[in-house]
Length: 158
Image: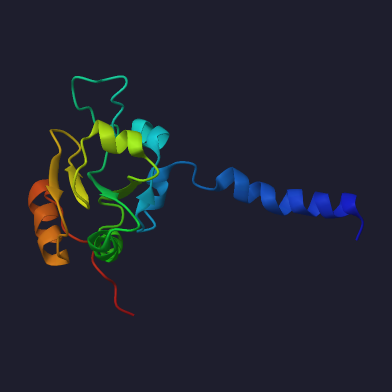
């Protein structure tokens, strides 16, 4: 196959994927997976502290959980498993964001993160609530259900 024909096929096959692929981090939440964010994503989807430094203004519509973590942190690795499970159970009802404090030092500094993991619960309106340290899954879901007033999605049996 010559190069021009190959490029045409590639363009025809790849263009629909490019045009219709999710283009924001909140779309991934519907897939039931936590979403890693950098500072630009944080400002766009969570809280633009550069625009609103004196007042918390959440940029999203669904409640979210922000996990400030580091790869070297043992409790953070345990928390990852819990958050992966919760992301699936609450897919489309809550967004789980992950902030790597090693890669996003400016975010960690801005929020004064001193203990890992730090889990922040952000309701669609109102102020966020933060908890430091590992949270077992049962405790995490209780907090979510009380603070966000949500229940997990129904699992469908085949």
